[in-house]
Image (cartoon, rainbow, N blue to C red; front, side, top):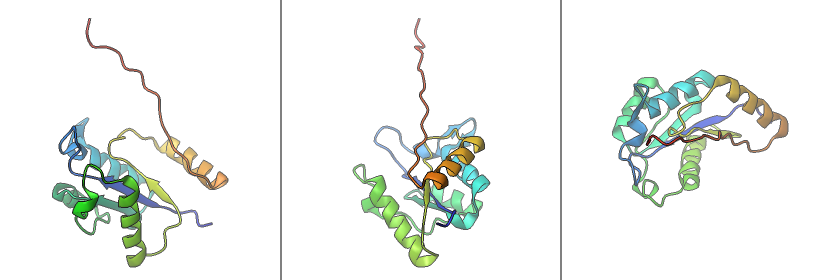
Length: 146
């Protein structure tokens, strides 16, 4: 098994609850930029693919030099569009224009805090077990009211 992967970033322009959420800043840096910057730390530009329907995100991708070949089709940008359908559409395009995809790392812009240490552990586990790995963190919310 080849030990490389395609990093897939799916960044729709609008969500039902929060408009332009992927361009909103966290610690002065847009979510999409944080995600692309992390991807660039663990892979080459030609292995990072962004699917979006947002011109602003397309321009960020061009500046960063990652693959974002088109504006995502309207049918894959609806509130009922699935991650699966969007991912398959992106992978199909990548395979037709570059090469076969053996492994995928899906990075969601709405999960902005990642560590290289965790990534290395997850990658090692994935290639050792050859199974899907999902990383999550439990968080505790405290009331802001008194």
